[in-house]
Length: 445
Image (cartoon, rainbow, N blue to C red; front, side, top):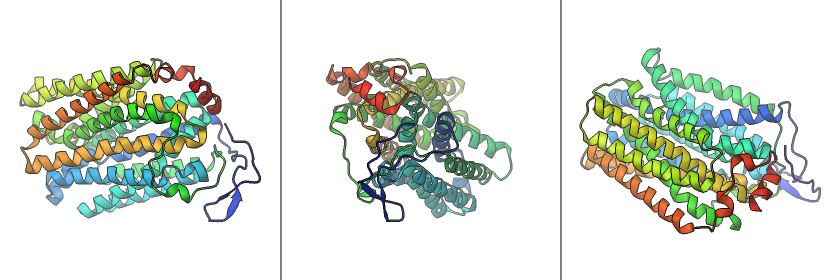
């Protein structure tokens, strides 16, 4: 594990508010590096799985409690808003107090959210659970991503791209299967996730700390959009791509279940979770297949696949249903998902090699801010248009057209960048050495 050089003269605020050595050596744990990075990746998978687990259940909630489609997207969107605010407030705190304390508190928040879901008796409870989910996820994602990079830059960069897609795919599909075929449809999936979070919290207790504490924990909680100078050009290129691909995820998560039920004329919750599962599975495949490809090329592939996939999806929606429309819809979802995986992976790989270890959590959190704005805002607008606009099909068409437009804007930005980021674009995960500090230095050469 990498660590900063001890500086006894420096002090920082501990979680209790007392002054403590800022650069004491990171805590050693019983878990080795491989097991530790596996635990961190599993937590990221679980967080994203929990965020997508309610997707197949919205139809059941809607039937029981009689709310409109716009309420579905508000419940979906409030999660994104909570993540966004949490990222702004807590995104950098693990750079100061350590990764482990942040993760333990975040896992406690997730466990509480699962309890609220289990006891939910109306929309207000759903909103409260989603806020709890969002706050704890936003606090954790920066610490998780940075922690994996602290341990191993090469594997950490790969897992930062792969884990969210696995979590999104698994959460939607496993939730659908549990709801469809096992008892207690609105409780079982949350009880399973509750058990997972408890086990992961116990695993975190056995891990070593990967960073030294340093001064400024309280000051780091003041929301600000601050980027290291070296990363600013790359973030300007990556941000539109990441916004576009996560807006696509919002389309499939918020409107996908209703669209597919319209096409197949079925109320099965398994069908409801299948669009997001296909999208995220294809995204994970893209991360694996493109891991040795130059970053700039990965981003071009991602944008191109995103545009083609969305256009195919829109064609299927416009066709009105039937087996061919359903097949075309899932083909479009798979191609779009490949674009999501390429664009998301490319954005992270374009930026992360340019930042110092103590800046990682903050920069990753800022990238996730972009992602969750893209995820939440268009989805809420889409839900409003379904109710007060032209209905589901016209809204899906307009939403998809907006995603294509965003992708074209991202493509224009990437083309304009020319060779300004070429020194980053040729960095592949396999080129990065195992330890984080040398990895950052190698990327800057």
